[in-house]
Length: 164
Image (cartoon, rainbow, N blue to C red):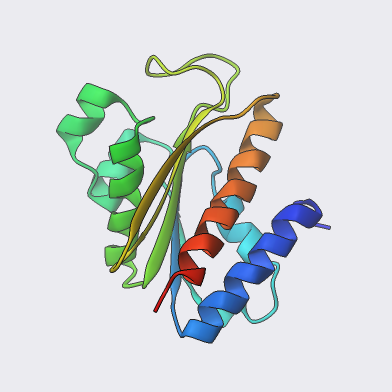
């Protein structure tokens, strides 16, 4: 099963909640490189809610495609709470989605931008709410990326459950 049962269950909950609320979704992914969107894509009916996603691994793509402030990227680096927020907001606007999720962090094996391996920021942005969480995941590169994907789906489900 793609991604394992935890991610799949969370993806199904996200698609169900978005569909029930009539909301569309978008993803902006750095360290997960499309894993969140791919997991959503395993759920039947996702085409009714998933507008699309952007894999923004480089800072240039974060800036050009998502509108992340270049000065912020230069000062804080790509692994930062405000960068995550701007990524989610940028993809939500670019794809005209109702709710967007973003992931940025350090999967390893080396620290990056002064942040340790496993440091991850996930943001979920809608017109009504912005949620940004910081994590320190353990494990190898693959494990950190899977944990990030799964937690992004959990946060997305949490925000969707709070929609009016």
